[in-house]
Image (cartoon, rainbow, N blue to C red):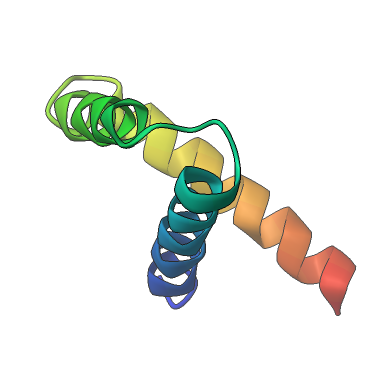
Length: 64
């Protein structure tokens, strides 16, 4: 779980960057955030968490 907070921060930075420099509108960013919160309350939350943990694990072994 050490990688959870840096991933959240990286996604927040990417969202701010895309909102300011690209065509991502603030309403799109809010919609994506709302989708994330709604997915966290569903039965898919465990599968999404496991998939992201496996992906971060693979990225961690490649980066080292």
